[in-house]
Image (cartoon, rainbow, N blue to C red; front, side, top):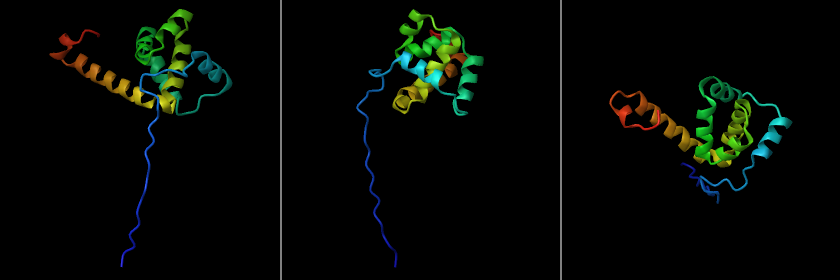
Length: 124
């Protein structure tokens, strides 16, 4: 005789849309950076951004997330931009837009590396 048990779960969708930055504040993130040490989960991403991206490319990512203008206005350096990006990307509320951005960047790189398709990509 088997014992059947029902499993019940509930999905709760956040009210924030994927491009909304209603409570996002760069000053708050910089304050968090000053008050905390980076854990080992963030360190590989910091190294990746530092070694593989220019400031212009980092600002493109920030523009996708919707906060590049403030970074450009206040003239943050590369290290500060990277730390702001890391804090934004590691926030669970931002995970849908971060995943979408990473996916799109992957597709753009695939197109850019294809001999035939790269001529159709405007950004290279």
